[in-house]
Image 1 (cartoon, each protein chain N blue to C red):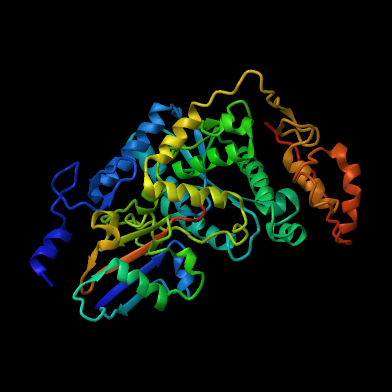
Image 2: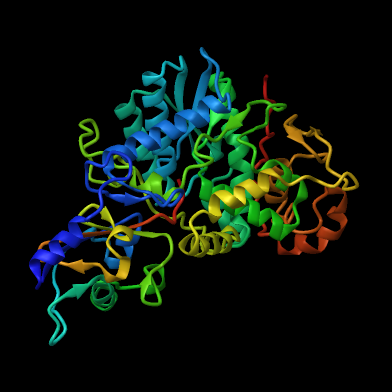
Length: 372
Length: 99
């Protein structure tokens, strides 16, 4: 081997763009800069701090719950929030909030990770479960509805579950680890589905300000690649050998949900990843396009009201969670999926009642009222 | 050539749930160098036991899989053209899972 040349080439004749001292460890997709590990940590953390401050996400003294699944985004979020809170004196009371959907072999493992995070970061943890809230675990739901549309149930239920948990903790805000890739995917999904109402909201960094608990996404402009790599060679606290933020050696759980392979979002995700390979800026550019959509004044938009059954915010008579739950409890798993969304149409669904699994009548738990 | 390969982010499930592999890769006859392109082909044949499409797409890794050679992003060293040396550590991390 031409040792001399190869070594020089591999060692990188270039140095980090920012400090000009150290060897680069990563090429940032957002800027195409080649930067070293230390500069990356600084830039990563500083950018998120600027997003938090620039968008006025928090006020001093607020109680904030971090939606924590044990996966890479929420683990990094918990770490970074706790670090920035300390470093920049945000004055926030932070909590970890986790949802147990009841998926054996997936969620039970990732919850172990969150429990470790509770200890590692010193943040109090609250876990809410579908079983307690709705009377159904995802495993039970999938047995009834099959492997299609399960993400619809899970997503709708999770949203409410987080709000319940947040209300229990009496927090002022909820933060989630949605990253730039996620938001770009959502923009595309909403375009593909013609969901104009969601399209108009999905790029907002804070949502639900007129609802029970506002929620925000500090990672809105953070690339998934950077979240995974966010390394730290001299981080002494977390010595686990998982990737984190591969560099930071943070402890997180990484497997795909066993029920997700058929999710529609998967297609948007593949597409976004292919786009990123060609032109990495495409992700933030899609978000920018999304932020600048304006809805035509002649488009009819849904009005926000409250669910008649449980009081949760809803644009229909019943909120989606109540509709889905009703469907499950009456043995009409298609209720709320597809065209007939209203309970008034249940006449049409009588034919489907023949598909009833027979003895599947778990007493339907009321969604309960949210005391706000 | 002796190398250490690590699989993370769920990719280990494609290799019998083993995260770290210490391997000995034979160089192709007549060639002195081993490139990442050669290594990927080798991995696909020898280590990936199921669903190879989760790991590779065409000649390169599936979009969404990060590759680090000695803790450095392979985008810095030429991606598929990166040359490997004895005792190098190559890490493959999938980003394609929930957070």
